[in-house]
Image (cartoon, rainbow, N blue to C red; front, side):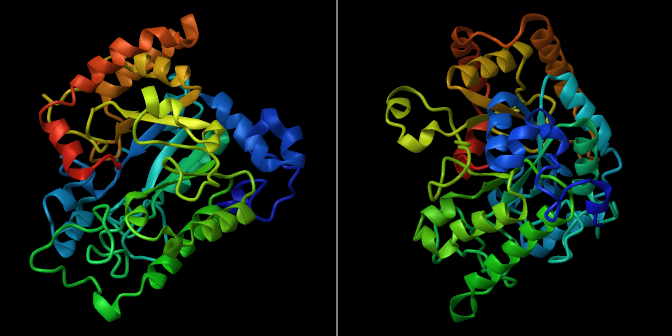
Amino acid sequence: MDLTSLFTHGPTAEIDTAPSYLADYKDLYRTDAREAGRQWFREARYGLFLHYGLYSIPGRHEWMQYLESVPVAEYARLKESFTADGFDAMGIVEFAIACGMRYVNLTARHHDGFCLWNTQASDFSSATAPARRDLVGELAVACETHGIGLCLYYSHGRDWRHPHAPNNDAWGGRARPAYDPAEPSYCYGAEHDLERYLAFVGEQIHELLTGYGPVAAIWLDGIEVPRSGDPGHFRCQDLYDRIHSLQPQVLVAYRDGLVGTEDFLAPAEPYTGEALDALPPSASKPRELSASMTPGVWGCQSDAAAPRLSPEEVWGWLGQAGAQDANLLMNSGLLADGSLDERDVRVLLEVGARIEAEGWPQAGAAAATVAKGRAKAAGKGKATAKARGRSR
């Protein structure tokens, strides 16, 4: 699906045609598109994070393939149950707006390699599943229609499907599940070629930035893998330059920064105490904190007894983000059919109504409520987070 014809801008558009989410920054966009994007991001304050993929079907955790050492072929069979019958892009965007949010970030491709768009680089996607749908494309139309930013999560450093993605023998950072015996679909030793994986990544990023109209941000994940060795092998600066050449307003984040030229920082944990005082000069960049409605789990959680954030705890996260001059990216795992979880909907709409009535929370109210929310991650959530590290 090529959606560029639906928009008045794209990689070949005139620079003075601002995307709808940058309508208030159109004058700056004409002279410095990326600075327009940065200013928009600083003022956006609040976004909706959506984790959705094959892991949503069992509803245990988004790292199930890794934590349970599910073989690649066995995990791939979940694709035959992926229908996305409940995925409503317009409804999602309208919900985000009602919550006071100004952008949506969708997991276009998580660590399992399953893609939520009609990629030509792989047959492992929502477009080739029973859903037969391009979910990124549908969300792109909804975001452009309503004038909010579309951000796309993409697992860069970690891939549990591609045969030439980083292996455990050369890289740390939980690059692959600890299969025993070895996963037969992976390439090893002299047969392994990281360059082939990087070419695959480049092709997919190119698709996302040339087929779906304006993108506000590319949100990369899996930073622990390149950090476990020589990050130069991943040539991230080349990737960033390519992204900006395709759409100059796009902001790039790779967690708390791999090479230092990222446009904003998205750390796994809020900066506190000495860590906050020790931030390098690059930390003056825009920042974004992220939290999940189900502490310790980012995909949907089918366990009815699993802890969930209350309205007061979400309010506390907003206050903590504000205290650090950061945005808050609040995650809600979509259900197996792609619909929003009504438990999260009720809470986040209540918070949105409070923002409308009172304005944004005061930073001083944040500490106790955030601490309470984190305590909910004890037990299963805490064990899951420990097992997988802090990656999404």
